[in-house]
Amino acid sequence: MYETPLDRLERDAILHWALPPEVQEDGEAVHARLKAGDFFSGCADRDGSAIT
Image (cartoon, rainbow, N blue to C red):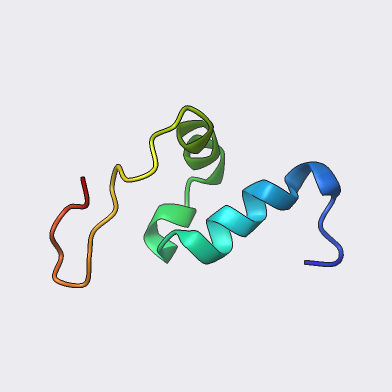
């Protein structure tokens, strides 16, 4: 985290701590989706149910 460039800090924090690993694979697409306000597409709860 300390070596992360400032312009990537927000993106890296969201990708590494807020999203499940399978969503992290396509980082740039995820970042664009989050900036557009779509926070829950492709996310599921512990039971596997989609989060809406």
